[in-house]
Length: 254
Image (cartoon, rainbow, N blue to C red; front, side, top):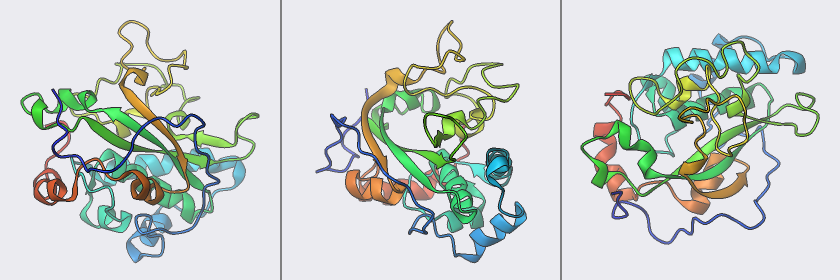
């Protein structure tokens, strides 16, 4: 049983007949506050901007750096600026993905997000005694990176495919959204599929095929700011105000 009491009102979250498209951008936003000294220091620590040929490897390196420097917690404030995530050294999966977007844009790599509405039951394993408080829908901003030439058909690389051609992709224990490993960490070692299209996902129980958890595909947006402006955050402002101080300090997986 999931809850609708904590969700914002007045936001239609249905799949669009023709998915929205977006050209992406390298511009700063309120969330992706690229000019902030905290963000600039992180980008400097990761080295010079990569060439087109080395962009994917550089993004993988940035992913590993964020995973090691930003502790996973259950923060629910989707509008939290990347600079604050880096300053505190803790963030949700979504906030750490935003940090990776900020690095990419700082390097001149355009990013955009795909808006997905995920069934709240996907998070049941992490809150076994609090199912009634888990929101019925979770709005997920799934990043994509503009890398012309990376694939012949589509210049946009979803974060799902960032590690797709590495030796460990699709191997090991499938992701189940339980235990200490979070979705952000899992990206580096196993295929995460929202569309039931990848043959690299295990076929026994299929936990990497997450398409069954999708309630709506909202299309693409130039930034996560634009997505949340149009469709709202997962929780209403009052719920975020009450829950954020507690959940932003609770380690994910506990």
